[in-house]
Image (tube, rainbow, N blue to C red):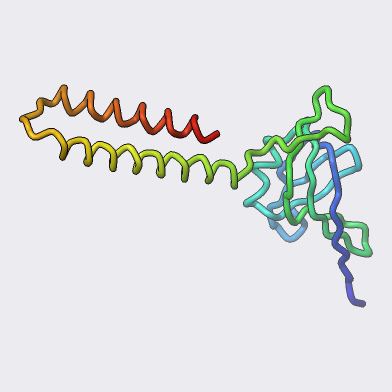
Length: 151
């Protein structure tokens, strides 16, 4: 008899996570939720699920005819304290936003360096370390001022 699996996306509130051992000796986790217990063999996501105790998670679940429900993928974690379900916001960081911040930091550092080099070329006299430090601080202030001016 073939054991067919169906996949679905479910919103669950995590209550507890417990490590278990299957009959064949394989380790897995039991995730207690507001909608019953789910198993999870995906060790790369269990750490995030453990951090989500008391929070709502959006997950991909594989269910079979025998009633087993396995969490296969963690899609989002939501903070539910004092929130209505319609206003839930993801509690996990937005990877795109984090990457954008790092990219912007790199760009602005490059702008400040370019300004520093050009302003340094303009000064023909000997410069002390303090002068160079002041020049770099001036370049950083100029880049910040330009950044704010374009918002």
